[in-house]
Length: 223
Image (cartoon, rainbow, N blue to C red):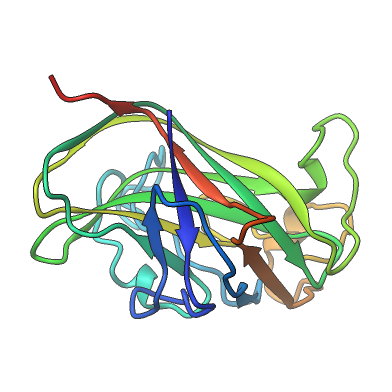
């Protein structure tokens, strides 16, 4: 299991930003933040979907439109100098905070081809009220930093020479996952309806010496 640490100068928003991934531990680095508005969630593009294939096709899909959004943080390695195989569970350890009492954090592992095609591999989400327990939900204190882990499930993929390993972090992946209204109120079907009560959250990811956010990857050593 190998840690790939998140890095930036505080401008990791979208694929045009300065977010990066490397095995080097972070130093003194700026916080990345974005605004999550439940009224305009990040759309689901491909992935392990079960239903409505006509409107929401499943499987690998180009993520470049998603990565153009300012409410998606993007962290990328340099192009691979040799093949890199990942086989096993993927986990993201994050240090984060929010302006609201509840929100979601999402993560997606992407294989970027030399021609720019950004292929989704696996993804996960955590609703912050359940960060410690699913049985005993607990709301957040606004602007307090929390450490938690997002389970991206498992995958097996070889990042070929010239490819880029990429991580997307945001707060929505809709409609695969129900939007979090950020209000702390009990969720219901109405949470997904037009006109539902929403709060706009400013969410932040920390990655520095005291807050070493990292993607934990199951690297298979080359023979």
